Image 1 (cartoon, rainbow, N blue to C red):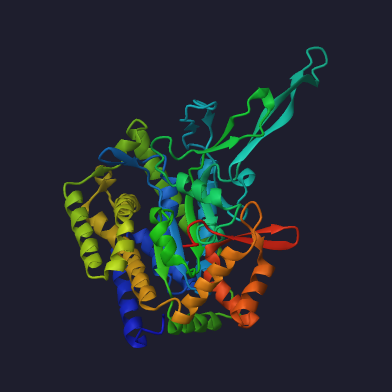
Image 2: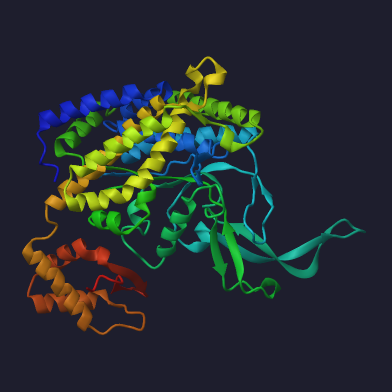
Length: 508
C-alpha cells in the first residue's frame, strides 16, 4: 500500500505538518518530542502521545473529569501501530527510562494518596499504598496477570520464648498479580496480546484489558477472577480482585486482520491509536539516519533526568492543587467559558472529515468517534496541566481553555486522520485475489469435513496435508496462504503436536 505516495509531496507535507503540530503543543512537550525524535526519527506524534500517557498516569489520582452523568480519569491508553523497523522500540527505549525515573521520584516522595479499596467484596475499605512501576507484559496466564491465593501456615509469637510458632491453622495468602498497581502496562509486541490472534491463554487477557481501561471513578475498573479451586475456609467461590490503575502503552506492526479487529472488537476503540504504514522512502531515510550515527556515542542520561524532573515538577504542582481543593479530584481543574464551544467545533471538524470518506470506511471509523471525543477532553485537561509552569498567576493555572482543546486536537486529529487513511487504502486494495478467496473457501470446506476432538480441535499437520492433497497445490503455497487466514483459527499444543480449531463465527 505504501507505494501510492508521491515521495516529494509526502515528505514536504509530513515536515510541514510536523512543524505545525509541534508548535501548537505546550513547551515541555515540544522539548520532550524534540529529544525523542533525535533517536526515533520521524516519530513526532507517538513521542508527544507517550509524554501525555505518562502525565495522565501520574495525575490520575488527583483529577476527575466530569462529563454529564459520567466521570473520567486522566489516563491515556496509547497503541502505536506502525511498520516494523521504524523506531517503535527505539522510542520506548527513550520513553521507558524517563517514565521509570519519574515513578521512582514519586515513590520516594511518599506523598501520594493511598488507595481505599472501593469494592463490596472481602477487601472493602482496606487501605493499600500506591507504588508506580512498569510492567512489561509477556505472560498472559491468570495467575501472573491477576494473581490468586495460596495456603500458608498461620504463625504466632510464643509468649514465653518470643519465637514464632505454627498455630496449627492454615490461612490464605493473597498474591497480587503483576497488573495490579500504578504505572505503565507496556506491550512491546501487542500483536501477541490475544486481540489480533486468539489463543486459549489470551482470551481472558482481552477482558482484563477492557476492564482496566474503564474509568477509575467507580468500581468497574477492578478485575475480578473466580478461584474455583480455592479451598481455604471451605469457601469455593473466593474472588481474586486485581486493582490495576495502570496506563497501557503498546506497540505493534499492522497485523493482517487490523480492519476486522477495528470493526468487531472494542478494545482498540478504547485506546488512542496511531496507525502508520510507513512508506518505503521514509524507511530508507530512517535507515540512512541510523547509519550516520553508527559508531558514535550519545549522552542519554541527561535527557532522562531532565524530563523526569519536568514530569515530577508537574506532578507536584497538581498534587498541591489537589490538596488545596481539600483532596477533591473533581475540583482540581476547572473549565473556561469557551471550552465547550471549541470542543464542539473540533467534533464537527472530525465529523466532516468522516463524511468525505467512503461508506465502509465511515462505518468503521465512526465506531471510534465517541471514544476519541473522550480522549480529546482528557488531552485538553493534560495540555492545561503541562502549561501550568509557564503561567505566572497561580489562580489562572489548571483552567482548561479553548486553546488547550485546540492543542489537544492537533494530536487527536493526527490519530484520526491516520486511522481513516489506513482504512481507505487497505479497503481499496483487496486482501485476496479471486483465486485466493476461492482457496479460503476451500480451506473452510476441508476443515468442516475432517474429524475433530471433543473440543473441536484437529491436528494441524494432518489438516495441511489434507489441503495439499485435495487442492493439488505445493506445500509452500498452502503454508503461504494459511498465514493470511491464520487469524481465523485458535492454536494450541497437545504434547509435541499443534492443533487448531476455527474461531466461532468464521465457518460461515
